[in-house]
Length: 336
Image 1 (tube, helix red, strand yellow):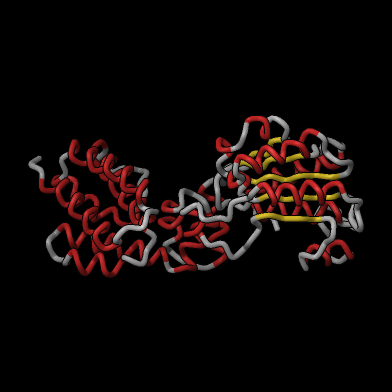
Image 2 (cartoon, rainbow, N blue to C red):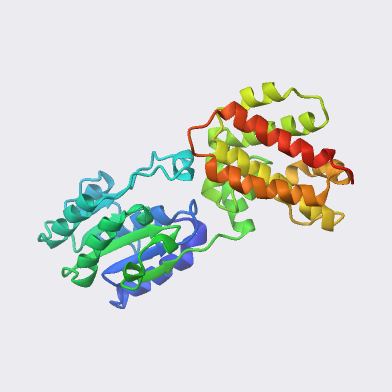
């Protein structure tokens, strides 16, 4: 499937195919959680479809399409294409590393004759997860691509890829959809007045916003901000807060705290900021502005950067959360 914000990308891909300009290696780049993988899978299915539709999509009915849907197509190989990998694993970079043996298997696979489809195809999702040896091994296939073969690499951190790999790929860039497009799509998935706030938290990545909603993380976020506000007013016990939120990914908690700080900075320079990371807690933020020392806030934000770096380490989660809350409280205790 492709998403509404990808229609121009699809038209471009279709033109490449029709004009015989599709390269032997294609690199999908762009932010995570905007549908690059879904687009790539739809295009792979189209490449081997024997009866494409008038608008150049896979028919879904031919033998190749049925084999693709069952993930048993003999001419297609995929790495790190797992729809069950959740956002927390992605956030912690826990996607399985692509190793040199994986690439050697792919190189061998690409040299075999086609059994069914028009193309021999390999898709490597999270291409940045290749270790150095794997990346170097892949260069051989990129430099001497077998006939009628296509390699798709997907990455939201292309700076981590070897320049020699990037230079040998046709670059397909995927941008964030605009806010209106994202909200329109999210509203069709489920009626929820909280979509604008969730989309902000998700960095305008609609698939992440949907994941936050469906997993309950949106509610966790709202609860955290409510508890934070009560704690700063002296109405909530710090131990109870740390116990309540210890099951949330620490990096996510730090990100929520960073967004909270960024909004307070905006309030310092604007009476009523038009853009906020957390528009749903506007009233709470506004009530705190007069108590914040800006220099202390900036120091706290620097500390949050450090905390985020260590959030994936094996730490005592409750102590981590309590330390962060105490540092946040100190920002408000400074004289204005």
